Image (spheres, rainbow, N blue to C red):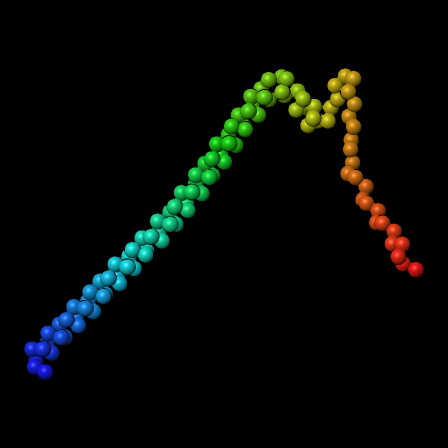
Length: 109
């Protein structure tokens, strides 16, 4: 082999290694960008879900405020909270159900 052929082969090898390095760096950068985009998409989705839940909560709270601002809505709420009875009403306290009794085992001698 001539020195010129060796230099040409070495130059081609250097260009190939350099090209492979550039492609690898581009691939790593692309992978990093894709991973960051996926993470941001998850954050955006969770933010949208929280926003939706908060809006629903605000609507429910506004309904409760509107209901409690009227005497027809506030008085029953107060009576329930304080366990008061109106005239001709009775308060009935219901306790939890009694524990179930086990079935007798008739197969035992």
